[in-house]
Length: 256
Image 1 (cartoon, helix red, strand yellow):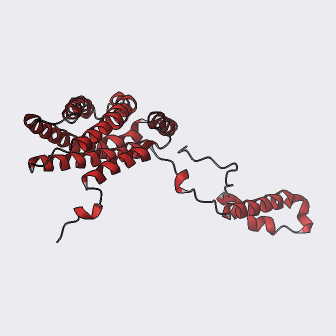
Image 2 (cartoon, helix red, strand yellow; image 1 turned 90 degrees about the vertical axis):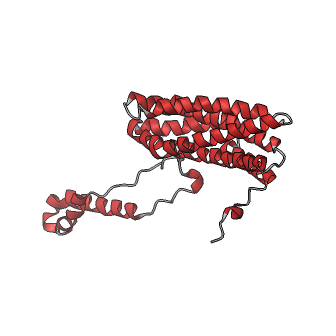
Image 3 (cartoon, one colour; image 1 turned 180 degrees about the vertical axis):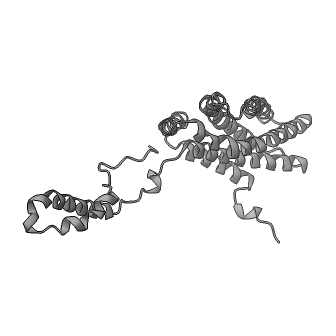
């Protein structure tokens, strides 16, 4: 579970007025013990609380740190970006007259279909966009994003069809056109969501509901993609990159 378990005991708070009362309480002698008894007791309790407050609370491990809904959606965009790189490599090879890497492209489009369109975009359309519109935020942007989701599904269908079998010459040109159109649309699409839409979620979703949404996202992720969830999908993308020879990050470093 992403949500970190709360501590069984809250750290006591030493209020400033209790600390300021310590000198007067400690100054009470036996001659006025009756009048100062309550003050001495309060002083002892304040000192004890101060000692407890000084005890450090163990820091949460990375596994215990909660993943917020915006962070969840943004890292899923990372999967999308990596498939766009797979599409770019396919375009490069086709334009260079090389054989169409049909199987890797088909696998990449399959991840777009199952992980991005049928999962990630469904989360956005069900949990994010309606709350923004209801709050009167980004009312011009949200309809465009929804329309782009629909157009993307059409393009993905064409890419899946074109890479499911040997690709004739005309289909090669159409495949390049469809992959290029998908890249051109989704680069600004995901950038706008990461910088505008997802940050706005905190303005329109109450904190308690915000935390509960993180649990909902995780439950749905594992229901669809098993115990490995997001990590398993990233592994699938990495395997496609290795097949195409574009996994090694160093090859993208320019010589300057």
